[in-house]
Length: 254
Image 1 (cartoon, helix red, strand yellow):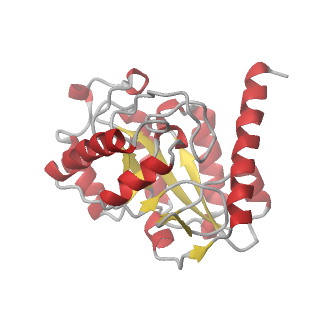
Image 2: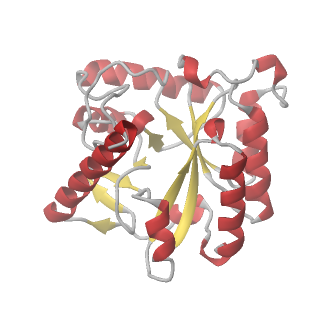
């Protein structure tokens, strides 16, 4: 398996120390991740560092610098605030910024996020849904706005569905590493804001042990796209529900 990295929750007030620590690890191994940038963060849980304490003077200029270095950028929702309790088409969580909302309203919110990107000189056709949660109306709105790629789903290769290209994430990192010698591609999802020393140590060991399997996200975007059938879509939905239930049961410590 070839492994790409995506980093969620990139904001001007994220935990910059942890972000920079993980970036140094990526730089060490020549990995250029996909970063999900929140256009207008209103999620209090993502307020980790006072913007004036950030190690960069201009957040958006820094994002453009990362892009110039080969990092890929996705629009990560708009405000990252969960407004519904809908699970959407990829039911990993029971809350969403978009799922369950009428298409026109979703379009208006998503368009505002896209305009914020454009004002700061950021162009992307890749979308990253907060909580992995979106519905068919989200897809319709995204397509009208020119988005063509979505980082989500389960599988071993990019696939097309509803006129969009999906780039699958891992169901479970441990299971990927057990099948590391098999063919296929996946993405590991990283939230640096909530990482601890053990997490950094684990990723350091993982990168060192599987260096030949690591790819930059831009390489993932160059792969041929597969058409997936109905059974594949059903299996993906069932896998997502299974993962939701496993996480829920773990939270209950059953």
